[in-house]
Length: 85
Image 1 (cartoon, helix red, strand yellow):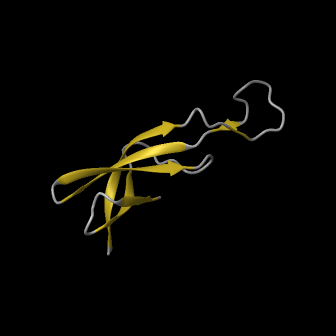
Image 2: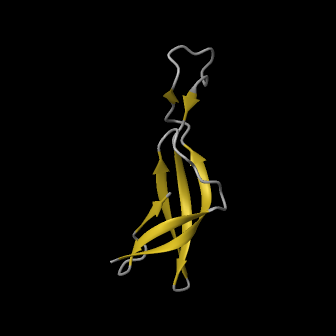
């Protein structure tokens, strides 16, 4: 009983505290470092606005703020959703 709708990316935050080094030798602290992100997506169903979050691993595609993404939700519980990128 899943349905799909389109949602809008409201924010994209970088997780600074979880650094992943991609180089074996670095010249400074952030040389070759990549970080995971958390995006917040808003979607509206039956006149009510819902929010969900998705964790994106380091090096993965982060959609820009204001772009639309696909949201899958349960019909009987619309607050329970997942984001498809």
